[in-house]
Length: 272
Image 1 (tube, rainbow, N blue to C red):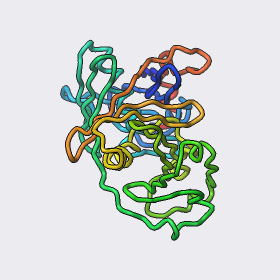
Image 2 (image 1 turned 135 degrees about the vertical axis):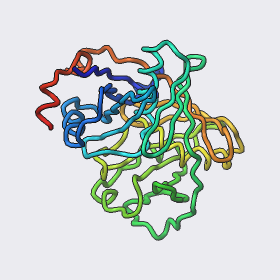
Image 3 (image 1 turned 90 degrees about the vertical axis):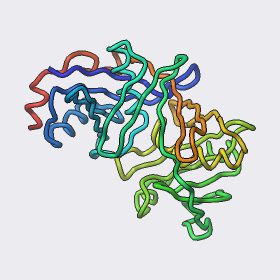
Image 4 (image 1 turned 90 degrees about the horizontal axis):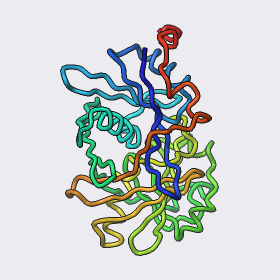
């Protein structure tokens, strides 16, 4: 049988955070089986973990397929292992690099790469997409900088248009919020996530930009999705960002559906 637990990541007293189903496997299943389990568990992201030779390997799936570098999925997996083994740190290996998750002072922390921004001309964007953007840049994603938190809250995404953006993983809109905080929203319809609840990997793009803009080494971050997300980011090295988050196991039966208890082997067989 599979053991499954849902965790809420990037939560605090004002943010519910982003749920992720953590599935511990004895051995890897086919991609079809993993995708089928992800769909049945009905969470925004499902991460699968296999322990081989004392090493934890991780993969992440959304409703449309496998994804690369999922921040909240990595923290959820790290929390599951750290809490079950009663340790302070765990190393995760993936096809996209190694990830270490550390528990310290009530936070779960992980290092993410710092992505260098490349300026992008706002006037070359479709006005329906750029709206009131005052600047734009690219990394893995296309990022629009808006003039205020109010403009960011009011931003109305055109998902059909966003889905047609070539070369970039997602669209991120961001704005300054006070002297030591920035806010964001994240849209990735191409991978089946219209608007993400809370996105760890987005900070690879945003944190370096706002560190420079606000002349700061540590910042608070809020993601203004419907459920909300809360982060802390710190400039760890010139090439890495330390992200800190609250992570909690979900015990709400109305949300857990079949995920809190054991998932039987029949779930696997239907997708082999």
